[in-house]
Amino acid sequence: MKLKVSGLLTLLDLNEQIIDQEEGYWIKIDAWEVIPSECIPHGIRYALTLHAPSGKRILGYDNAHGIKPKKGKKFSGRRLEYDHKHRQAGDIGVPYLFIDANQLLSDFFSEVDRVLKEIKSK
Image 1 (spheres, rainbow, N blue to C red):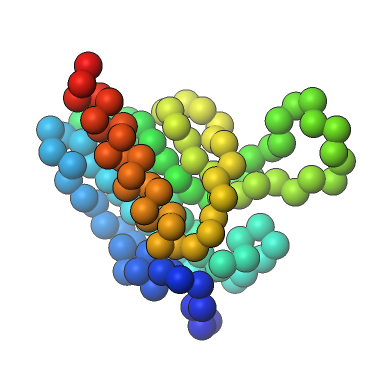
Image 2 (cartoon, rainbow, N blue to C red):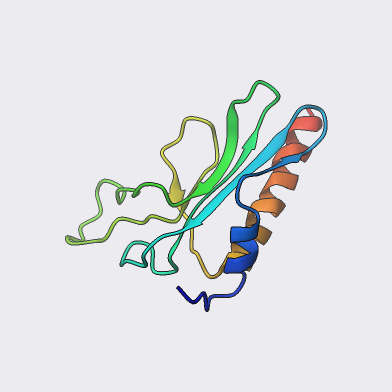
């Protein structure tokens, strides 16, 4: 499969990487090719997660499952959003606008920096 979208090869090269963030915090990156579909047009499944020293996920960007539209929306036939982020350990996720893999990595690492700064300031 030829990867045309910006940064997809970089994302794939990071597959199975664990990156230390000091003080016991760590990042795990998983990314692999799949057949492009309506839900995953870029042909990459990914999960980028930040973990606390206990191993608990405290931030995640992924496209492993669909996010149902918010209740009360009056639009029928809306497609499930697959690219999304989890801002807390237990949330179901909020849609993430996937532009390209470079932007995904930039957004994720920027949010990691923000979350860790917030944790350390407490």
